[in-house]
Image 1 (cartoon, helix red, strand yellow):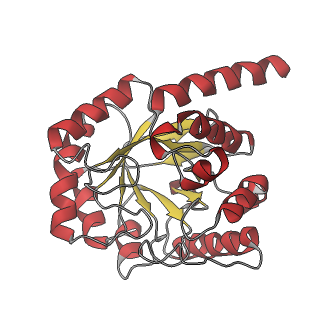
Image 2: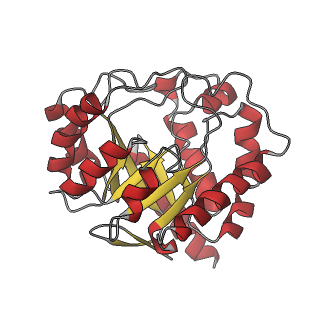
Length: 277
């Protein structure tokens, strides 16, 4: 299975590690650390050196309770880092839900649009459909970052998340976005309780019936803190364990903060899997 992006046709037969680059002052685990473009660019270089298969750059926090920033502010944060990241020989994703930002970063050469809103904003699908080959990640979120964790409810979280992703996949197909450009993300922690997140992990393989690769982002999430009792700064082991569990259940891309540890863990997992086979 492959993921077609602007510059790369990514082979997903091996699980891919997407390194997180938050160019924001208020992201939940590392906000403020990379607000200077120079620091963010060095971080991109470090993640590539640690084995990241791709980079995901975000200029607007989507943590629970966060508020949106303007298009101009988001672009001011993202564009200098994007320009540098494009020289590193890895696919570069931009985490945004704004059509104006999508259009600007694709014009600069971004490979992937990673949208927590699954291209539902007016004009977002137009931007992606109008591009020849960019990749896109469609994510499920109930509500918006400002309100999504206020008592989220589902009758059947897997069925409802899967139904939403199927509808967005069909919307993309109807606009001529071919399947090979699309991956799907059930949105761990986005409008979901601890039990919802764990239910999605237990039943994750059912989402493979949608026919597209899955991208999972468990890294440092609050559910891991609830399970372990550890602060966000102490969730490396739990994050790696969750990434391995996601891959074991069929995920082809894991979005992580701790690239080196995740890459090493996946190498051991692959070696053990080959040995078992």
